[in-house]
Length: 420
Image (cartoon, rainbow, N blue to C red; front, side):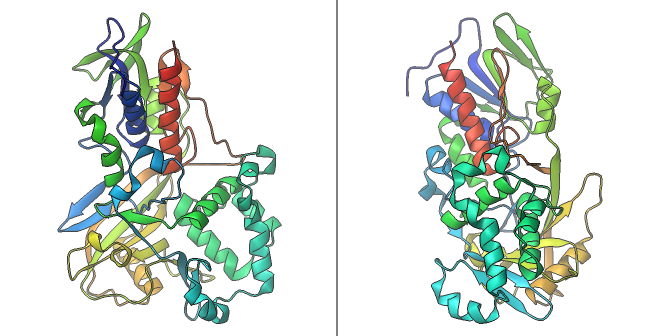
């Protein structure tokens, strides 16, 4: 690391407002470049939306989240091996009218291919339609060209993906991008599909909180929590920031909060956000089936869930010895009430084919603003410079993903490091 600089008359070179993934990544890169950086965050812990609650020995991430080791930015930000990622099996289990079926990644689970050929419900016509839709994922450079984009709904219609494959994709992808209307950029979806093909998502041994903790490790002493910034104003060639009690003057200020808070502090219009509610249950007895995500692919699903999973089957560290952990998620529209616990528990049991009478609710996470929308045409880079020395970063400035948050933080840091 270069010798630390300090802009004359300032308390630090850069003040980062927000200790989520983007803010932490930005601060860590700035620290590596030798700039004096301070991080303020309004919460009682780092991580932003990537947090883990430990309840009676169970690790419950705030909203069902997974970490894909294929994200190109991840190894640039942390030592991936230190996270001890516990992978899910590569595939999805679907509940249809008569049975559960396993659709596994053919290259990662070749032993499942013979049974899949008999029970997948996919014929030549369905496979060809899926190939027409997903084929462009092989040419990632074309996905970022706006002229090649459409909504997911439009792209699936054009590829003539119908019937069972369509219901599975609709449900599975709704849980990934929190959109059950198919209005998300198809190019963005295919970028995610590409990542699913290249890597198997999993969960760190200590929960998703391990990721922000790993990014923050070199700058822990620079982070100040419970600092709710109320005002940012120009002060000569720098900026003054206050939380109503303390004041910091910096040459650069990076607003790395959620989109709505960023709009309040900088005037940058906020992206529309999508919500999710996740319930977590403790289960005494093991549940059958593979360590995959399960979806309801019936013509008329029996409840509100977009997905469910036996989390501890993939990630044993998420539950105490002899116990099992189930999570299930439903979408949460603007201003809408979450489904009842009973409705979510009943639907989860129905999808998994399990008796839920002895399930014990551990906790519920209601997250009205979990992900920014990503409409077509796909814009993988939005402006991060608000004014001379004032910047904004987050997944709402790049792609709505962990990859996007990390990239956004780095590119702001690099822009600051390169500035006069």
